[in-house]
Amino acid sequence: MLTILLSQQASANLSAIDWSTLIVGILSFVGIIITLLVNNSQNKKLEKIEKESFEDEFSRNLITNSRNEWLKIFKEDLSKFLACMMNYSDIAWHEKVDDKLLAAKLLNKIKFYLNPNDQIDEDLFKLIQLAYDDFDALSTVSENVNKTMELHLEQVVFEIQQYSACLFKTEWERIKHHAKHGENTKFNFKERFQELYKNVTQYELL
Image 1 (cartoon, rainbow, N blue to C red):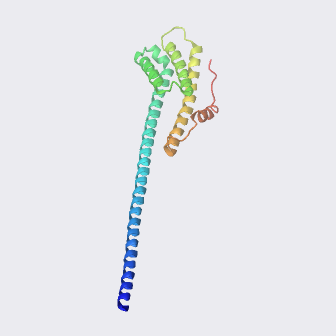
Image 2 (image 1 turned 90 degrees about the vertical axis):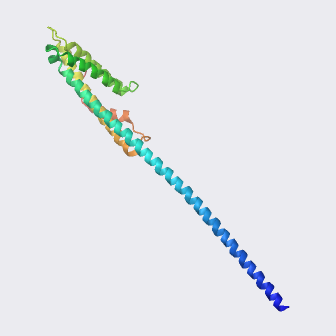
């Protein structure tokens, strides 16, 4: 009888051990599954962040390079345009029709570079148009040289040089800012331009 009781107790203890082992095993398995799910979720989040970071950097570099190229071409065409403006006398007396045509083409190109809805760009184009109007008149052969118009053209050209220098510097600062901090960060272009421009010596146009 005692043997039977001991056997039953041992069996009960063994069953308790089996259940404990089973429960521990199940909990361990569940823990592994949860760990895998969490790691998988974290990996997906990391991949998303890395992808967005790559796309943001790619987009930022693309925009920065495009702006750099635009700025380079704009500077070159504006320089050519101003050279034509100051060469009005030679163009007139040697009847350089091709140079007059070049000036007209450059005027249109420069207009397309500028933003018609931006006050800074609009003011620059007004100056450029003033210079072209004087140039167009002075580059035509005439016995009566208009000294007042010559002086006005020189002043306007100088004003364009001053104005555009501030514009290009501000644009370059904006390019560097966005390349470093991203396109969505704020850069107060107007305020920075005005800060530079007010310190520039300007002629009073006639």
